[in-house]
Image (cartoon, rainbow, N blue to C red; front, side, top):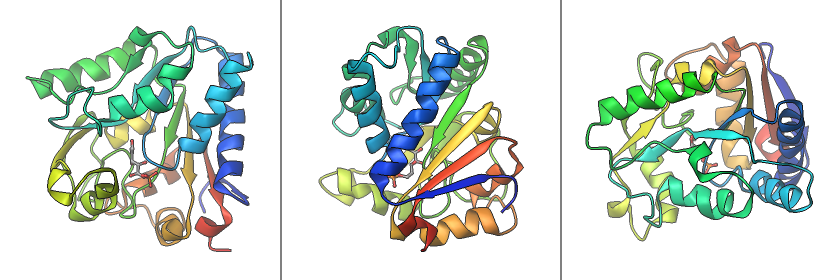
Length: 243
Ligand code: F6R
């Protein structure tokens, strides 16, 4: 497995705790750091840890800036299933981060191309992402970069695969409500981060973990690009490690 540091722990809670240690160290080392954040089920134990550590006075988010990976196209920030709302409910509303320091792609952008360029510009203006958090989809997607013939470089729009819509329908009333398209940072945006932490938990992720990190790099498994990054820590539970 390339130069990726892989750490296998017992449970998803253990994964969240170790990831929180890495975030805590990063924020202590650089109180103005820029974090790349993800949604989904996998980071929830991490976010619970970050909230608890903020409340305990261990982590100060007052100067931290954040950029989320992705957002569904067409969903308003306050829509129940929007990723902006997910972030508010699971992290931002419970920590001392300044609202203007949090960024999520705008699902309602009237000019998406301009929004993508502006998102990339804001990341650059902040000095780039110091620590990027990732999960992985069953098809190997990171952010919403679905399998394809090339690695998308920058923030862009995507057509979600049927597999991703099926996987995400658990958050909606029915599959018909799951948006068909989304906005996401590119694989290039992610690869430009100084450090990357990818969390992978659950037996259902064992196959994609092996394909992404033990097989050759291919855009048909977008996460495999991480094998070319110089500082990736993969934290997984035993179920995802297949042991
Ligand atoms: C979410 C994101 C996605 C998820 C992936 C795994 O912002 O970027 O790539 O990380 O779909 O989702 P969960 O953790 O729900 O299995």
